[in-house]
Length: 105
Image 1 (cartoon, rainbow, N blue to C red):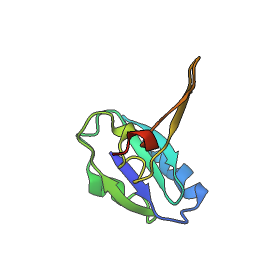
Image 2 (tube, rainbow, N blue to C red):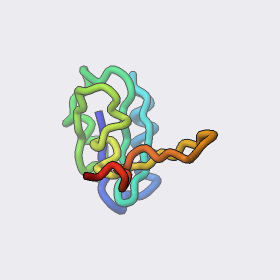
Image 3 (cartoon, rainbow, N blue to C red):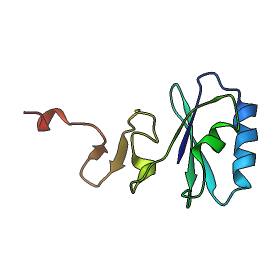
Image 4 (cartoon, rainbow, N blue to C red):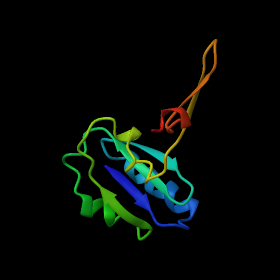
């Protein structure tokens, strides 16, 4: 489950929400994007009602139930923002997450 916070949400509200979510049987993780803050709930969220989560704060924009693996790598978790991963190898630096000019047809 992913909780998307409204733009301009105060940090104190995120901290209060994080504290409340820690009382549940999940582990909340915060991801700060360019324009949005997303909180992912790690663990079994099948028994959590999305509307109950939505009612926790007026600063929650959207609650998304993600039913696929690798949700932390998903664009839903990153709220549509991509991240590049740079890995150094003995022969070169390799970037994952973008299309190389050499690969474009």
